[in-house]
Image 1 (tube, helix red, strand yellow):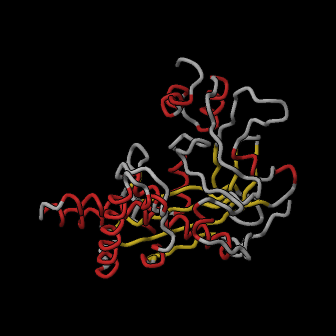
Image 2: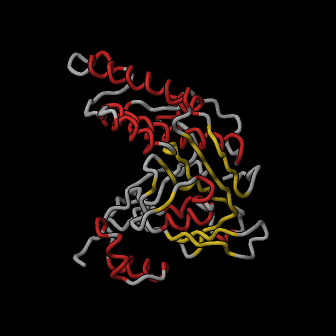
Length: 309
């Protein structure tokens, strides 16, 4: 495998991302699900049961989005970073301060599948998609935080004062779609320009939505990395709270809610996968690597425990 040296190492910030630009990256299918209308966009409009209602809320959403863009009622910000990195001890990824790779900046702790697999099927860990340090290969990992929720509370409050709950709910649904669109937009910028490992990529929005590109962007909380406290490392690495106005709550939720964060893996075979159930031996090892008690690790990993804590 050829590892592409990033064009831009370190942090790149976007203080005011155009909502008009993000609009072109919106995946509308989840928008309909938020209104309990099932169907894939745009085919949902032809559905004999929900088609008419889907068309109405879609038109309402775009009319409101026109107003939001014209009045700049919402703002979007983004930050990303590409860092020298290598896997160590099989399941950890060291990020280095510079290309000398002599000083570890932070260590990311990942988890490995432990379920019984068919012959030839590996038990995956996200660290597998970064070259191991002992191989002598200079690899990299990325991180990002985006938001399209700046101004959401104020705009919702405006509609609620007018007793317009429909528009208030619509604002939140639009902001969520814009945040996901921002994640898609930024990932494309990273692949083609900032990292540049897919500089010649030419994909339409439908291909982006179905992820027909190299690389993945899993977030702490995803099935492959379900433990949320790693999000603190991500935010500190990017100084994301200062750069994006997104803050982490004590439970590691993001505020504004219309925000997305995660890691960038460029390996062409990188893929999403569920961690599944894990056993006490790995939880104990993870707690040791994280510097937390086993009991605390068990609380954060409760849905994935394959034993009774």
